[in-house]
Length: 73
Image (tube, rainbow, N blue to C red; front, side, top):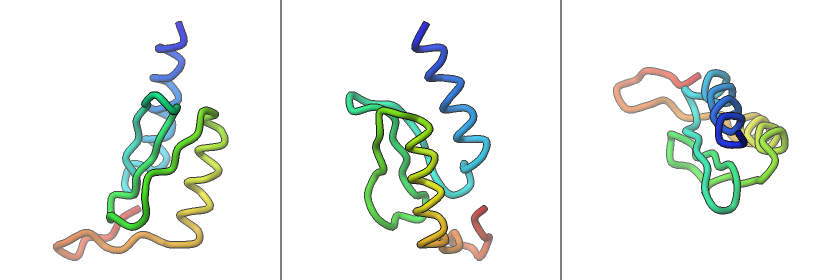
């Protein structure tokens, strides 16, 4: 049952942030990684906390444009 819940959390995060971040789960919990390659992975067992971390990261370091000139986000 937890796996279905994890899937819903990932779907929500991807819907909100997919243009700028990719998401997944691992042995340490949920993770997010910037699509522009800046920084390392953000990891947290609590998806709500991960969402906060992504939001702060995005605010501090707005994503760069993707190659080809199309913006992210």
